Amino acid sequence: MAEPTAVENRTLLRRTLITMSAMVGGCVVVVGMITLIAVAIVGKASSAQAEPEQNAPASGALVPASNVHGSMPGPKAPPAPPANRR
Image (cartoon, rainbow, N blue to C red; front, side, top):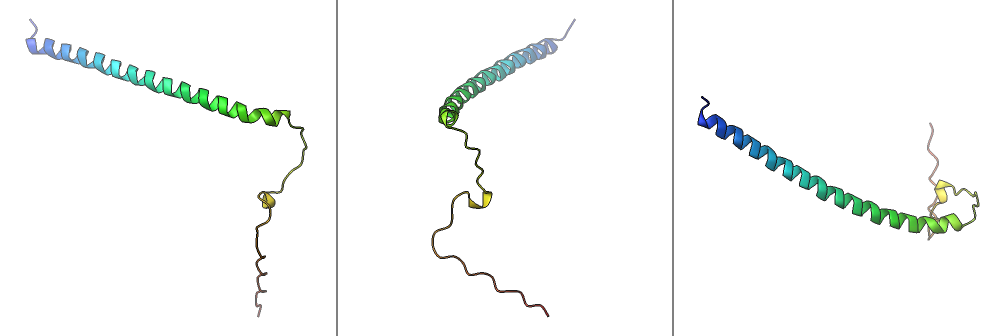
């Protein structure tokens, strides 16, 4: 005959696993819903920005990386003095 504590431990383990499964499942559902909502919002925002670019004519012009933001306002910095070579 089995001891009563062994049956109680098995029942406790089963209840613990069921509770843990319910908690993990609930977290998966909540995180999944948040992810779906975020993907829908970002998808709408990025598609709204992409539409004007699709209608614009393709110019094929490349902007050099050194002049992306234009020239800096104000006076230009003086050139560096030449290095002394001895």
